[in-house]
Amino acid sequence: MRGELIVSASGIRGIVDHGLDAGIARRYGAAYGEYLSEVHGASRSGRVLLGRDSRTSGAALADAVAAGLTGVGWDVGDLGIVPTPTALLAVHEDDWAKGGVVVTASHNPAEWNGLKLASAEGVFIEPAGGREVQARFEGSAARNEPTEAGSRQRVGGRPARGRRHEVGGALDLHLERILTLPLLSTDVIGERRLRVALDCVRGAGGLILPELLDRLGSEVVGINLEPDGRFPREPEPIAANLQELAQLVRETGADLGMAVDPDVDRLALVDERGAPVGEDWTLALAVELVLAKRSGPVVTNLSSSQCIEDAAVRGGGALYRAPVGEANVARLMAEVGAVIGGEGNGGVMLPDLHATRDAPLAAALILQLLSERNESLGELIGALPSYAVVKHKMPRPEAPLDVVYGRLESEARRGSEVDRQDGLRLSWPARGEWLHVRPSGTEPIVRVIAEAPDTDAAETLTDWAIQLLSMVQEPGHGVGEQ
Image (cartoon, rainbow, N blue to C red; front, side):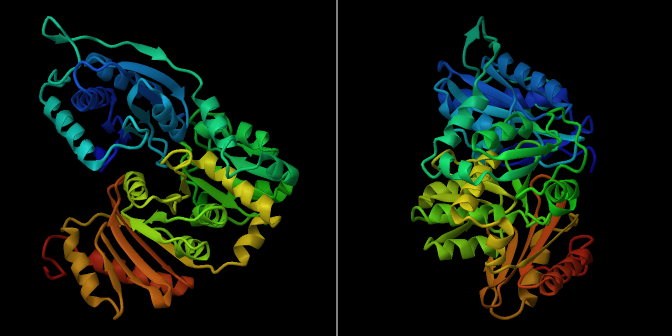
């Protein structure tokens, strides 16, 4: 699988020099530029904003993307190293921006990188748009050069080359938009004077979170704040990777710990005892705050915890579930008029700011809630119903996944509710249990996630699903067709 390029609704991802290289990045940038030319018209003026996280491969890939975009006529505004939500907000608020590219592999290990594509609205492009970009990219592969169809301007039958220039101020814009949100009171947060232990995993978060927390009146004790891309641990902010942060909380007497991934769209929390609380609580607590101040729907994905739905119910809001993926959640949020949404991986999306997962935003909302309630993180969560989430991943079977979905569905306990929007989700609301089996959009694996009131019950569900998945070695083997 090392040479595989993974294509998702909003872009591509792969291991650098083993599936993803500068040539691919250039062709993909050109394909995206041609797609934008078709969307906005060949004579339309504008630019594409380009940002990246701190990965050591990022500069070379950004150069390649810029070459592809300028080669088909687009000007490129270079934001440099910025969080993904910072880049998307900049696209949204820039009158000249017709789209954006972020060079990042989000939470993937250091050897990975990728390209995320945004629309002029500052959200990831729709799946249909992603398929059009992919078709152009694949069409250019035989020539190993960008196609010229659809370029914005032509000189002597060839596309006019665009220019690349630096664009500053994106971080300041992001900070200002968060600090002036009506939901937040810098005075209330400042009076609490919370001590926050912060781990930015040497990603882009070190460029914004220390200043944000300082301007909110918190005391910051930090590790891994240098944005040099030399990740000291696995970058995904899950409990297993937060032991150094947990120790920092205990050693410094911090009120809580905060950890982000390299492109700063996910926030994980550690309580005052140094115990990771699980990424789903980030969104659940943000929902608690928002619905205490306004009413409206909440949107999350099919793999997110029941604790988020509980928070919506307590706040009087209807909960809607979308397929996994930020673009899917953003689209459903717009359809139902959600006041808040996000994903259970620590990604919070607030339409008041922009419909993008945003860890700095989430950090501010959590501090506001703790300050208003005058409770510790552990006290807040300890007073609420809790669940055990068990997550596994395994190599994707060669057989069509519909085969095993059918077997799981047919053997499920009575009373299960079935959702086929994204893989297979089986739920038993009366028992507080659910199981979700789906192919990953970022890795060549199948994710198996279950939740129940206790770990044993959740593990029983995942064990059952994994056993069936393991039986499927080739089409028709071990599991009957539907």
